[in-house]
Image 1 (cartoon, rainbow, N blue to C red):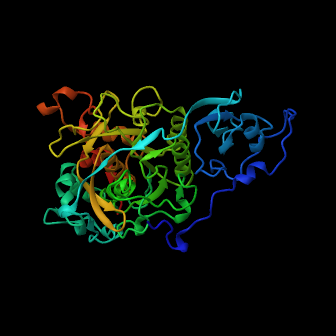
Image 2 (image 1 turned 90 degrees about the vertical axis):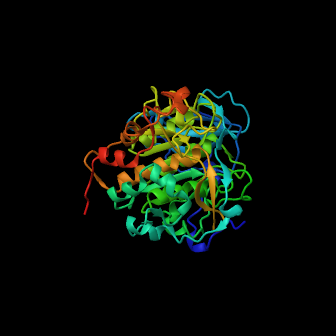
Image 3 (image 1 turned 180 degrees about the horizontal axis):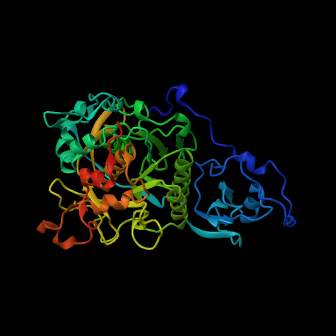
Amino acid sequence: MLRTPPQSLLSTALLSAALLTACSHSTSMPAPAAPIQAAPTADVPLAAAAARFGSVGNVRLRDGDTASGVAQETGGQILTWDTSGCAAGDADTCAALVGLTQPSSSPRLEQVESNRDALSGGGALTAMMGGAISIWAGGAISIWAGGAISIWAGGQYQPIPQNTALWKQIGLPWAQKLAPHLGRGVTVAVIDSGIDLLHPALRDALSDPATWQDFYAGDTVPQEEGTLGTGAYGHGTNVAGIVLQIAPGARIMPLRVLGPDGSGDVAMVAQAIDWAVAHGAQVINLSLGSTEASSIIEKALKKATAKGVLVVASAGNANENRITYPAALARGDSGLSRAILSVGSVNGSDVKSSFSNYGDALELVAPGEAVYAPAPDGRMAGWSGTSMAAPMASGGLALALGERLSDKTATLPDLMATTAAYVYANSANSAYVGKLGPRGRLNLPAFLMTAGVEDAD
């Protein structure tokens, strides 16, 4: 599998871990007046992110701290070093994230939790073109941004006809007329298994290569790796392709945190969220989750949403009456309920998908069965899962953000949930009343009109 695109696409490498030991460590207490030593760039990983740690913990920084000193005190490795909020006394943005290979009893460590393989991406390759994964023939997605008329002809979705019924189900033809910029100027960070960076449907719709990062491999080339049909290979490419079918004018920021088997670490996801915010993403798509809550990821999401970044997360595929984290943060008292959106899956008849999780914390559902999109190696394939429903919502948010809004606020995810199409009149959903969102299925035209999309031309 090709991993390294042409040299012109590569950005600078991560800071070397040697920076951590560049200064000597003193066992004496630092002078109280000494300032915290700032990292070269706040929120940029200082250690090689490919290192795998059994657990991670936060350290609240204090006067006199240096990266090498905190690493020695905790017996760990510094992953992020954020001093942006130290002057204001903000504990969330005056902290370091530390990776631990061995248990540590350091009193400096807070919120220590399991790290390795704590999260996974959901979804399965379930449909193929004519019995075989087809070679891409739809052209570059960026070409579609010339206008909705070129995308829809005779009521059929031209680039991938197999999705025509799905897109009509969520009102995409009308939505793309309501939002003619099609997400132009909006960057969506896809934090996932990487993508096929050279796919003809994606390569012209990516953010600046300087914004790419592979936290799993520890380099700047977030290229998917693996064999199509095995594990998570193709998952991120499909997710990115769904976002771009909804909002063809948007840009995708590829950030890899999942390995070929679909698993990834808490620290990598938290680092990727910080990275996406620092590099200009307006929407973050998280088609991944864990059955265990993560205070580390929650802290990263709070920082992201405090800066106006919108977050969409998939609900999980275990057919359980609970949704995975971080999607579960979308409702309740986490402080994230108006800026993060949890998404489950329904079929083409608006009936809960047999695999989709559900529950009181779920805010929205979208069609997530056999959704066709680009696949690695220049191909196209269909996937099923809540992972496929989530990027439909992310693309919808990009459509709204690409237009002039009468009320452009961080409550757009909440608005998307409250304008959804009502699914509880269908008797097949009678066992799930109130557990597929306050109303149910994504309705893009209702969302855009209620958001106050105005004619920008």
